[in-house]
Figure 1 (tube, rainbow, N blue to C red):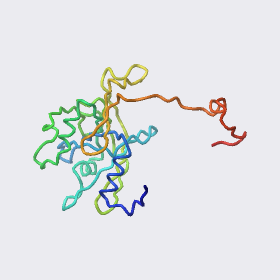
Figure 2: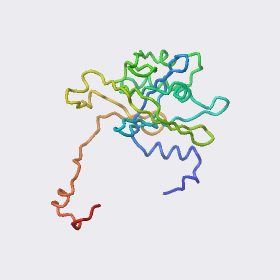
Figure 3: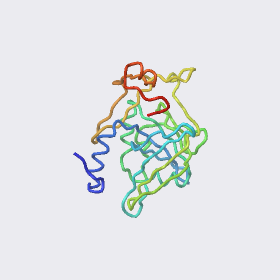
Figure 4: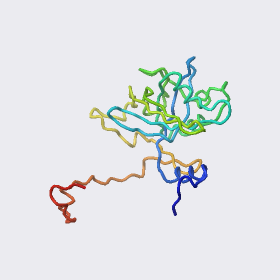
Length: 220
């Protein structure tokens, strides 16, 4: 089956994308507004984009009505910074609480039972329970369409990784990291337990296995 994206209803296109681009990492993003009030919300339209410079990208959906920007996007515009807190299995329930559309007078971080710690270089706090916390400064934000969807590129300016997960050679213990990714539907997630290794191939190795020869001077 195939479709032109322009022929699909918005909800149907969403269903096809989030049920095929799997798994998606989760950014539990903390921000503060101009008065220093903290906010936290999860996003799975997220990934690391580059290491030089170190960049992350967030996709933040807008709202309808008189306040089209979600708190996260508004706070990033006001302060120019945010923290990406990665989510492990132990944080899933708290992350779900942070996704609730609370009225403005309710602190979702407190409601989720999460403790915060001060960041090193940005105003937004970090979530102490997160195994990896990436302090970011906004590099550029782009708005798309009438529904105020935003693409935020942030430069990582400081990294925090829980003690005992990374060794002196900067190798990560994936099992101790225990991150989860977003899957299909409303409630499905995936851990890191089901993984496999496939060595990267080289041109010489490919030739040695008797594959068709690429003429000298040509590359794929």
